[in-house]
Image (cartoon, rainbow, N blue to C red; front, side):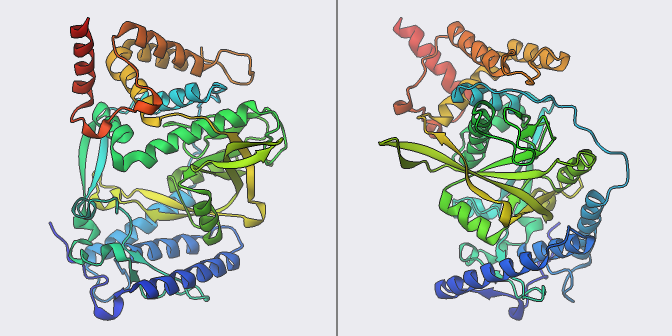
Length: 464
């Protein structure tokens, strides 16, 4: 049933800004956010959690304190608060993750293959995909809150300001009507996740996670930022281990790796100190899990996807720049899936604040290599769904039995090398040609990846 979008329907509660207004508002927003984050220097409190939910609802266009707010929206607000407080202040048994830290291959492409395979190879067989009416109409990714909400220096909330991208679609902004969920099979989901144009950033997230983790594991100059140990970092990311893409086997510190479009964008986000994160509840599960380890800290790692040239030893070389800092606070935000409510619960994502005094620009520099992320993703996708299904199942069972390397030792069996071997076997068993990086596969034109791959095989057989 369609619900009334009355939280911000009054004229005095809705402002649409001109370009000049936007520039001034953005400066004001940055100043206010800096002021607030400097004032809130204590640990996260229940009051912070509730204030974060209230602010985020305003960003989505819902005002739970308005006299125009429908009872259903008020109920949604209260349910979100309960979910956030329950995650933050959980008193039940501590959840312990039994994932095993691993050593990724020193070869960045093999490391990427292993991380992508790990993302697919999980027990989940059905996925929910959120569809956004606004994004469909505007033909661009706009599945985010339509309002900016600033804070006064005393912490009170200012009048919401509508973002320019949503100026002509106000009638579609009710989030309960705007978002819908559809169910996808695992194959359908990863075909979209790896190859759709609007999912490029999601794929890049896995790719750069692999590259950063591989480099941090094998470069002896990279030390844990908490205990200072070298050769102690291991990869433990993927489906089963959110918030700990890297872990220190010595002090149990964790590192969440995120990629951003550019280093300039990273500097802006650190200045504003509000970076989108993963599951709110899982972060606090992790904090409770390592609470008895005195040196265990939680770090945010940001890598810019734009490599930059630098002069080194008399020659010009290209690098990716990796930055890191300790996480100060994680606050809840409401994920778009919550409005579609496919399972009836509220999915809380997060906003990360770092301790600015700990944030280190250029923590790591990774030498540039040329690669095509969609080409690598297609190889992994094919190996798992078309030619390597039996091998994939065997790998999964072997991992459960503990026959993969415990990556406490760099000379042990490397799961990424196993993945590379399976990929080579898969290529030997098929007649598929592999595109070069200069002739990347045109994923955009295909209607079905499976049909496209079969067509490639048929064409080559006919030529023979």
